[in-house]
Length: 193
Image (tube, rainbow, N blue to C red; front, top):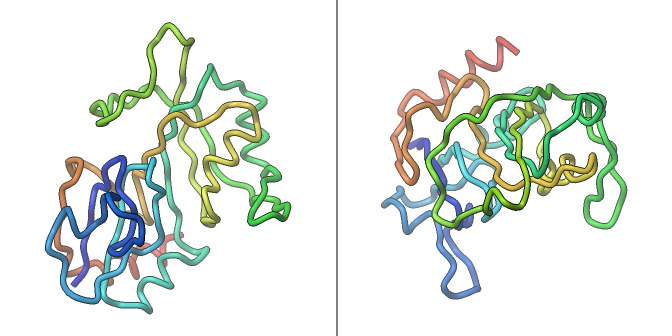
C-alpha cells in the first residue's frame, strides 16, 4: 500500500516516539503494518508526505532525481538578492559541519491563501511577511529552513506542495488517500525530470 497524506502542523513524521504526548502519524489513520514515511517533514512543517511499505520505492523518491517543492512564508519582504543567493546555493550547517547546498529553483510567490494552521504564526503588528517557492532535489535535515535563514529571512511556515509530479492539491489537512498506482506515477515522473 502507498498513501498520500497532508501532514498537519505539530505531528512527527513517524509512528513511534520515546517522548510521551507527541502526535504521530498513526494518530491520523490506520495505516497498514510496515508502513513508513518517505522522507520527513519536521514537527513544525506541513504538507505532502508519501508513505509506503516498499523500501526500494522510498529510496528512489528520496534520491536526487526527484524534485520536492515547498511554499515558505518568511519573516519580512524577501529581496531579489536573497532569492538569487538561494538559487546559487548557500552554506548551511548539517550535523556540525558546513554544507554547500546545490543550486535550486526559488521564486517569490503571492500568498497562496492556505487555511490557518492550528497554532497562530504571529500578528501583523510584528511586520510584513512574504512567500517563496523553493524546489530542490536534495533533502538534508531541516535544509529549506536553514537555507532561508542563511539569507536573513527566517521561515515562519513551511508547506511541501509537490514531490515529483504528485501535488498536494486539494488534500485537506490531516487527510489521507490510498494511492495504488503511486509507483507507476513516480516512475513516469522520474523519466520527465
